[in-house]
Length: 287
Image (cartoon, rainbow, N blue to C red; front, side, top):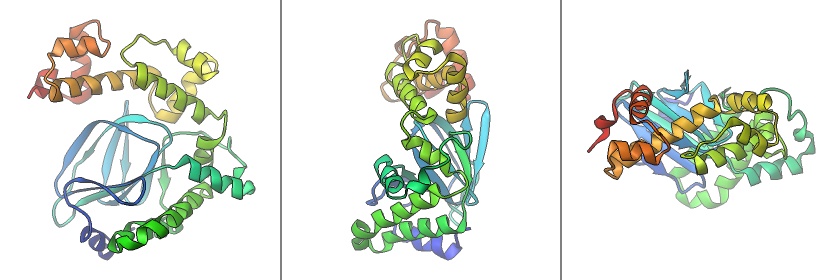
Protein backbone atom coordinates (compact mmCIF):
# COMPACT_ATOMS: atom_id res chain seq x y z
CA UNK A 1 0.00 0.00 0.00
CA UNK A 2 2.94 2.35 0.64
CA UNK A 3 4.72 3.14 -2.63
CA UNK A 4 8.31 2.06 -3.27
CA UNK A 5 9.22 5.73 -3.75
CA UNK A 6 7.82 6.64 -0.33
CA UNK A 7 9.69 3.83 1.41
CA UNK A 8 12.93 4.79 -0.35
CA UNK A 9 12.53 8.39 0.79
CA UNK A 10 12.15 7.24 4.39
CA UNK A 11 15.12 4.86 4.16
CA UNK A 12 17.33 7.76 3.13
CA UNK A 13 16.79 9.57 6.44
CA UNK A 14 16.64 6.82 9.11
CA UNK A 15 19.27 4.34 10.42
CA UNK A 16 19.35 0.84 8.94
CA UNK A 17 19.35 -2.54 10.69
CA UNK A 18 18.37 -1.25 14.10
CA UNK A 19 15.48 -0.06 16.22
CA UNK A 20 15.33 3.71 15.78
CA UNK A 21 13.79 5.90 18.47
CA UNK A 22 12.37 8.76 16.44
CA UNK A 23 12.37 12.40 17.59
CA UNK A 24 8.60 12.14 17.03
CA UNK A 25 7.03 11.42 20.42
CA UNK A 26 6.26 7.74 20.97
CA UNK A 27 7.37 6.67 17.48
CA UNK A 28 9.82 3.84 16.75
CA UNK A 29 11.02 2.48 13.41
CA UNK A 30 12.63 -0.92 12.90
CA UNK A 31 14.54 -1.70 9.69
CA UNK A 32 16.23 -4.95 8.74
CA UNK A 33 17.66 -6.26 5.48
CA UNK A 34 17.81 -9.84 6.75
CA UNK A 35 15.38 -12.24 8.48
CA UNK A 36 15.28 -12.26 12.28
CA UNK A 37 13.25 -13.38 15.28
CA UNK A 38 12.29 -11.26 18.25
CA UNK A 39 11.50 -12.90 21.57
CA UNK A 40 10.87 -11.67 25.04
CA UNK A 41 9.41 -8.25 24.30
CA UNK A 42 6.48 -6.58 26.01
CA UNK A 43 4.51 -4.56 23.50
CA UNK A 44 3.10 -1.45 25.14
CA UNK A 45 -0.30 -0.03 24.13
CA UNK A 46 0.38 1.00 20.54
CA UNK A 47 -0.36 0.64 16.86
CA UNK A 48 2.25 -1.12 14.71
CA UNK A 49 2.18 -0.72 10.94
CA UNK A 50 4.37 -2.75 8.60
CA UNK A 51 5.58 -0.36 5.91
CA UNK A 52 7.52 -2.94 3.90
CA UNK A 53 7.57 -6.75 4.07
CA UNK A 54 5.59 -8.75 6.60
CA UNK A 55 5.94 -10.25 10.05
CA UNK A 56 4.39 -12.97 12.15
CA UNK A 57 3.39 -12.40 15.77
CA UNK A 58 2.92 -15.32 18.15
CA UNK A 59 0.55 -14.93 21.10
CA UNK A 60 0.04 -18.15 22.99
CA UNK A 61 -1.18 -20.70 20.46
CA UNK A 62 -2.28 -18.08 17.94
CA UNK A 63 -0.19 -16.72 15.09
CA UNK A 64 -1.03 -13.41 13.40
CA UNK A 65 0.43 -12.18 10.13
CA UNK A 66 0.81 -8.47 9.44
CA UNK A 67 1.71 -6.69 6.20
CA UNK A 68 0.98 -3.24 4.80
CA UNK A 69 -2.71 -4.11 4.43
CA UNK A 70 -3.41 -4.86 8.09
CA UNK A 71 -1.83 -3.33 11.17
CA UNK A 72 -1.60 -4.38 14.80
CA UNK A 73 -3.57 -2.69 17.58
CA UNK A 74 -2.31 -3.48 21.07
CA UNK A 75 -4.52 -2.03 23.89
CA UNK A 76 -2.56 -3.26 26.95
CA UNK A 77 0.98 -4.48 27.70
CA UNK A 78 1.31 -7.88 26.00
CA UNK A 79 4.34 -10.23 26.00
CA UNK A 80 4.93 -11.52 22.50
CA UNK A 81 7.27 -13.26 20.10
CA UNK A 82 7.57 -12.93 16.38
CA UNK A 83 9.51 -13.60 13.22
CA UNK A 84 10.43 -11.82 10.02
CA UNK A 85 10.99 -14.61 7.53
CA UNK A 86 11.83 -12.60 4.43
CA UNK A 87 14.05 -9.52 4.23
CA UNK A 88 16.94 -8.53 1.99
CA UNK A 89 18.69 -5.29 0.96
CA UNK A 90 16.50 -4.91 -2.14
CA UNK A 91 13.31 -5.72 -0.19
CA UNK A 92 13.91 -4.81 3.46
CA UNK A 93 11.54 -5.22 6.37
CA UNK A 94 10.36 -1.92 7.85
CA UNK A 95 7.81 -1.36 10.61
CA UNK A 96 6.70 1.63 12.64
CA UNK A 97 5.28 1.51 16.14
CA UNK A 98 3.48 4.45 17.76
CA UNK A 99 2.64 4.38 21.44
CA UNK A 100 -0.93 5.35 22.17
CA UNK A 101 -1.14 8.58 24.14
CA UNK A 102 -4.21 8.10 26.35
CA UNK A 103 -4.40 11.80 27.21
CA UNK A 104 -4.50 12.79 23.53
CA UNK A 105 -7.25 10.26 22.79
CA UNK A 106 -9.27 11.50 25.78
CA UNK A 107 -9.02 15.12 24.59
CA UNK A 108 -10.33 14.18 21.15
CA UNK A 109 -13.31 12.38 22.69
CA UNK A 110 -14.05 15.34 24.97
CA UNK A 111 -13.96 17.73 22.01
CA UNK A 112 -16.17 15.39 19.95
CA UNK A 113 -18.88 13.96 22.26
CA UNK A 114 -20.52 12.12 19.37
CA UNK A 115 -17.42 9.92 19.08
CA UNK A 116 -17.91 8.64 22.63
CA UNK A 117 -20.80 6.40 21.56
CA UNK A 118 -20.60 2.64 21.01
CA UNK A 119 -17.83 1.92 23.53
CA UNK A 120 -19.32 -1.53 24.13
CA UNK A 121 -20.10 -2.16 20.47
CA UNK A 122 -17.97 -5.30 20.20
CA UNK A 123 -15.05 -7.25 21.60
CA UNK A 124 -12.26 -5.12 22.97
CA UNK A 125 -8.66 -6.11 22.65
CA UNK A 126 -5.70 -7.03 20.49
CA UNK A 127 -6.66 -6.89 16.84
CA UNK A 128 -5.78 -6.75 13.18
CA UNK A 129 -7.15 -3.56 11.64
CA UNK A 130 -7.46 -2.84 7.95
CA UNK A 131 -5.25 0.08 6.94
CA UNK A 132 -7.61 2.35 5.04
CA UNK A 133 -6.53 5.15 2.72
CA UNK A 134 -7.22 8.06 5.09
CA UNK A 135 -5.20 6.52 7.91
CA UNK A 136 -2.42 5.51 5.51
CA UNK A 137 -2.12 9.08 4.24
CA UNK A 138 -1.82 10.47 7.77
CA UNK A 139 0.79 7.86 8.75
CA UNK A 140 2.77 8.60 5.58
CA UNK A 141 2.84 12.32 6.33
CA UNK A 142 3.98 11.56 9.87
CA UNK A 143 6.99 9.40 9.02
CA UNK A 144 8.04 11.63 6.11
CA UNK A 145 8.52 14.45 8.63
CA UNK A 146 11.94 12.84 9.14
CA UNK A 147 12.94 14.52 5.87
CA UNK A 148 12.48 17.91 7.54
CA UNK A 149 13.27 17.51 11.28
CA UNK A 150 12.60 21.20 11.94
CA UNK A 151 8.91 20.57 11.18
CA UNK A 152 8.53 17.76 13.71
CA UNK A 153 7.94 19.81 16.85
CA UNK A 154 4.96 21.68 15.38
CA UNK A 155 3.48 19.27 12.83
CA UNK A 156 3.95 15.82 14.45
CA UNK A 157 1.43 16.38 17.30
CA UNK A 158 -1.15 17.60 14.78
CA UNK A 159 -0.70 14.60 12.52
CA UNK A 160 -0.76 12.20 15.49
CA UNK A 161 -4.02 13.81 16.58
CA UNK A 162 -5.39 13.13 13.10
CA UNK A 163 -4.23 9.49 13.34
CA UNK A 164 -6.12 9.05 16.62
CA UNK A 165 -9.19 10.65 15.05
CA UNK A 166 -9.00 8.25 12.07
CA UNK A 167 -8.69 5.31 14.45
CA UNK A 168 -11.62 6.47 16.57
CA UNK A 169 -13.87 6.90 13.54
CA UNK A 170 -12.81 3.60 11.97
CA UNK A 171 -14.87 0.42 12.01
CA UNK A 172 -13.15 -0.83 15.18
CA UNK A 173 -12.81 2.55 16.85
CA UNK A 174 -14.67 1.30 19.92
CA UNK A 175 -11.54 -0.66 20.86
CA UNK A 176 -9.55 2.55 21.21
CA UNK A 177 -12.45 4.30 22.99
CA UNK A 178 -12.53 1.47 25.52
CA UNK A 179 -8.92 2.22 26.50
CA UNK A 180 -9.94 5.59 27.91
CA UNK A 181 -13.41 4.71 29.20
CA UNK A 182 -13.48 4.48 32.99
CA UNK A 183 -14.62 1.04 34.12
CA UNK A 184 -14.30 -0.56 30.68
CA UNK A 185 -13.11 -4.12 30.39
CA UNK A 186 -9.92 -2.88 28.73
CA UNK A 187 -9.05 -0.65 31.67
CA UNK A 188 -9.76 -3.41 34.18
CA UNK A 189 -7.62 -5.93 32.30
CA UNK A 190 -4.86 -3.32 31.95
CA UNK A 191 -4.81 -3.08 35.76
CA UNK A 192 -4.45 -6.84 36.08
CA UNK A 193 -1.64 -7.02 33.50
CA UNK A 194 0.21 -4.32 35.42
CA UNK A 195 -0.21 -6.33 38.62
CA UNK A 196 1.09 -9.47 36.90
CA UNK A 197 4.15 -7.60 35.65
CA UNK A 198 4.93 -6.47 39.17
CA UNK A 199 4.30 -9.86 40.82
CA UNK A 200 4.92 -12.48 38.11
CA UNK A 201 7.32 -14.54 40.27
CA UNK A 202 4.66 -15.00 42.96
CA UNK A 203 1.86 -17.56 43.12
CA UNK A 204 -1.17 -15.68 41.84
CA UNK A 205 -4.63 -17.17 41.45
CA UNK A 206 -7.09 -16.09 38.79
CA UNK A 207 -9.52 -15.42 41.64
CA UNK A 208 -7.10 -12.82 43.04
CA UNK A 209 -6.81 -11.08 39.67
CA UNK A 210 -10.58 -11.15 39.16
CA UNK A 211 -11.14 -9.56 42.59
CA UNK A 212 -8.53 -6.87 41.88
CA UNK A 213 -10.34 -6.09 38.63
CA UNK A 214 -13.80 -6.08 40.22
CA UNK A 215 -15.03 -8.80 37.88
CA UNK A 216 -16.53 -12.26 38.22
CA UNK A 217 -14.15 -15.17 37.75
CA UNK A 218 -15.69 -16.30 34.45
CA UNK A 219 -16.04 -12.75 33.17
CA UNK A 220 -12.45 -11.88 34.02
CA UNK A 221 -11.01 -14.97 32.35
CA UNK A 222 -13.09 -14.40 29.22
CA UNK A 223 -12.21 -10.72 28.82
CA UNK A 224 -8.54 -11.25 29.68
CA UNK A 225 -8.27 -13.75 26.83
CA UNK A 226 -10.16 -11.53 24.39
CA UNK A 227 -8.04 -8.47 25.15
CA UNK A 228 -4.58 -10.06 25.38
CA UNK A 229 -5.10 -13.24 23.29
CA UNK A 230 -3.58 -15.08 26.27
CA UNK A 231 -5.02 -16.71 29.36
CA UNK A 232 -3.86 -15.23 32.70
CA UNK A 233 -1.68 -18.33 33.22
CA UNK A 234 -0.11 -18.00 29.75
CA UNK A 235 0.53 -14.31 30.38
CA UNK A 236 2.30 -14.95 33.69
CA UNK A 237 4.27 -17.86 32.22
CA UNK A 238 5.45 -15.65 29.34
CA UNK A 239 6.67 -13.00 31.78
CA UNK A 240 8.51 -15.61 33.86
CA UNK A 241 10.24 -17.21 30.88
CA UNK A 242 11.20 -13.87 29.33
CA UNK A 243 12.79 -12.72 32.58
CA UNK A 244 14.55 -16.07 33.04
CA UNK A 245 16.05 -15.78 29.58
CA UNK A 246 17.32 -12.30 30.39
CA UNK A 247 18.88 -13.55 33.63
CA UNK A 248 20.61 -16.44 31.85
CA UNK A 249 21.77 -14.66 28.70
CA UNK A 250 22.53 -11.18 30.02
CA UNK A 251 23.41 -11.65 33.69
CA UNK A 252 25.02 -15.07 33.45
CA UNK A 253 22.78 -16.66 36.08
CA UNK A 254 22.79 -20.40 36.61
CA UNK A 255 19.78 -22.09 34.98
CA UNK A 256 18.42 -23.49 38.25
CA UNK A 257 18.94 -20.16 40.00
CA UNK A 258 17.07 -18.33 37.25
CA UNK A 259 14.21 -20.84 37.42
CA UNK A 260 13.75 -20.34 41.15
CA UNK A 261 14.09 -16.55 40.88
CA UNK A 262 11.21 -16.22 38.43
CA UNK A 263 8.91 -18.45 40.48
CA UNK A 264 9.41 -22.03 39.29
CA UNK A 265 9.61 -24.72 41.96
CA UNK A 266 10.76 -27.46 39.57
CA UNK A 267 13.87 -26.91 37.39
CA UNK A 268 12.81 -29.78 35.12
CA UNK A 269 9.39 -28.21 34.52
CA UNK A 270 11.12 -24.89 33.87
CA UNK A 271 13.38 -26.47 31.23
CA UNK A 272 10.44 -28.14 29.50
CA UNK A 273 8.41 -24.94 29.33
CA UNK A 274 11.45 -22.89 28.33
CA UNK A 275 12.12 -25.19 25.36
CA UNK A 276 8.46 -25.20 24.38
CA UNK A 277 8.35 -21.38 24.47
CA UNK A 278 11.68 -20.47 22.87
CA UNK A 279 12.31 -23.58 20.78
CA UNK A 280 15.53 -24.55 22.55
CA UNK A 281 16.74 -25.56 26.02
CA UNK A 282 17.92 -22.90 28.53
CA UNK A 283 21.57 -23.92 28.02
CA UNK A 284 21.28 -22.62 24.47
CA UNK A 285 21.18 -19.06 25.84
CA UNK A 286 24.27 -19.35 28.03
CA UNK A 287 26.89 -16.95 26.72
